[in-house]
Length: 265
Image 1 (cartoon, one colour):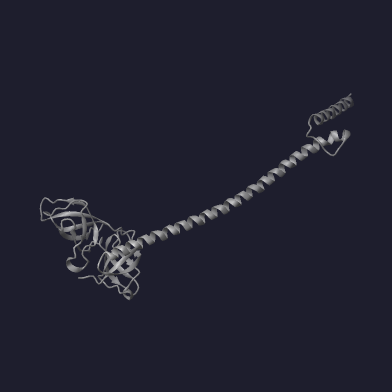
Image 2 (image 1 turned 120 degrees about the horizontal axis):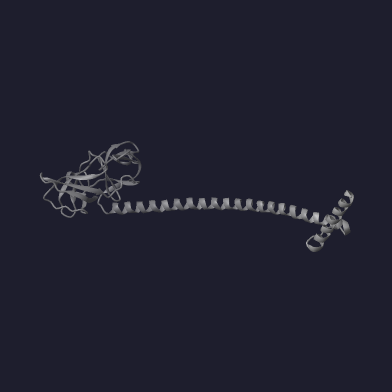
């Protein structure tokens, strides 16, 4: 009885294989007849399986190629970005030098063009420039930027010099209000700001007034811009008023300056 059941199961399996092959036109193979009915579906399934594996492999290889191409494009973009930054910096430097030249041409004195190569820490008290005694730079020579007054040479070496900027608390610059011609002494407050001392409380001064060097004392050429009045504090008593100045030159971003020579003292 068991043998008949086994035989019946085999016959049913073969009939299912024959029916599947006859209904699926895609199943084809090298075997014919009954052998084909048995093996061709297996061959079809195997081909499908290994074909899928092959497709995945080709897709992986293609993705690797795309990734390598993307890496190459990224490298090219990075190089172009760097070149663009360098070109912008060259244009910016050219514009700064042009401003310096135009500023220099507006005044009747000779100058030594210099690059800023160092600065003191914290609130700027001095800067270091790449010109020294071998370039004709001397102690107490005025130094200007294209926005205005920077300071005075405090020490010189063979190829470099130290410049004390006007923010220094020990700095004393005779200045005047370009509108009213009232004078005072510009000093640094030791905290990175400027104020005018000895400014007569009876002299008019308004926020926005332009402050320039007065030429008194003959330490600086007359007419060099310094900054603009930012705040005025009227004292209730005393002879003077407190005038605060916002400098035109940003001493924390100085790159190029002029050492002034041969101005009329």
